[in-house]
Length: 549
Image 1 (cartoon, rainbow, N blue to C red):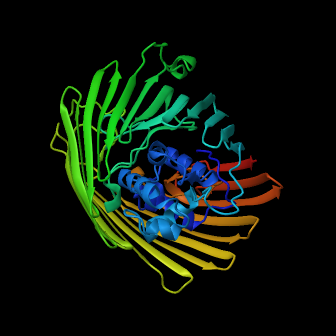
Image 2: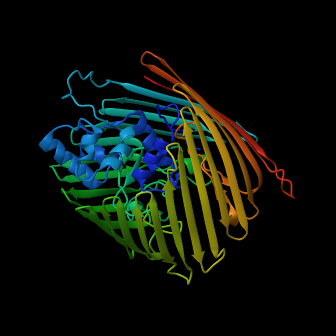
């Protein structure tokens, strides 16, 4: 479970579609906690793209390196961007991209007549408590920022044990300094990429990664780095980044491991040009030093990218993405020897680590239709396989949306085949909405899931009810399904067994001058009355309060 700060009362399908477009993913189940945290904060405090420098644009994760360079070039020659229609006309963007950026970007400009000015200090706070059949937890998040000059965040939580994340950052004209928790993501992820990323590349737009460099983190997971980090622009084209991590106290406090003074560090030097970027990354830890060189070139809608890394052995990834109108074609190959350590690496892969794997992936998309295939094999054994995904969307009438997704995994080791077929339907009529899904899985046996979710969404409140039936007798046939929760929460349970689930999610929004208060509640129950062997059910209740000034 992740708790994130967002201003919207109920983030609808438009918000999730924008996140999926900008991340290159096809389903909410493919997202991860840190990604949702970043987008939720940007939704709360949109990035001021007319005032942001190159480092801020890249660190936001909203823009490719080529888009950031194109936007800066446009600002220097044509002035500030005053509408999203104007943003769509800038090289590298387009109408669909500009619409997706809308919820996360601000067009504030001191050039606009009658501009009211930027708020000097912004404070956001969140408090969430949850109780279940066998556990309970309490968490809070507080973030204070001032016009992009400084940012302070603290997020303590108790859930079977106490954890906390905190950071303080100062932004100056040339760069940023962060003390506390942060993320470091460079290149294609071979040398230096902190945090969890999903395996595979389900869509053509997901082949090339969007590195965010050094950025703050308020995640409660172990995905972030704790220490000191900084980046700095040297001249117009060169950016230097570096960090040093501090020893982790958590294993010692939990008595799972003895305390260790081991530290790690890393950095990156990148040269940014109008159509290209080349960088060198280094990651040093007790296992040795990893060095990588990455480069990407973008010309007339075609991006060619590659990264090679040395960590006692050579690993590489290389590929290309070509765009023409609404069509995108991608291809990428990779080679990760078994001796290549997978820590702090997150290159394209089909297994869970960036190690002991070779493969080639291809994908094509045209508007709302897409297909991809990934052939892979283990280098240390004869294990091999292929993953394929096809998706499509239709709009039968103004009020209905249908989405279909078919994925298949075929390999020469058990379970040899897994086929996942899904159909989603959404209907919207003024304030009344209905979502439904039917999901069938074939692996060791059969898995089946279906849900119906009617809801009402008004200006200051919303209420959703979901009823789910599922059957999956084998763990290989389990079905992951994204569940609605308080805005930004990452809730993707694995349905396994035979039973049902019901949930009620609601929220309200109140404003008192500059103070905005939002309250959310989620109640859920999962039962297993259809199983031969008795399995205990679970009940949960979560309450989340948020405010910002």
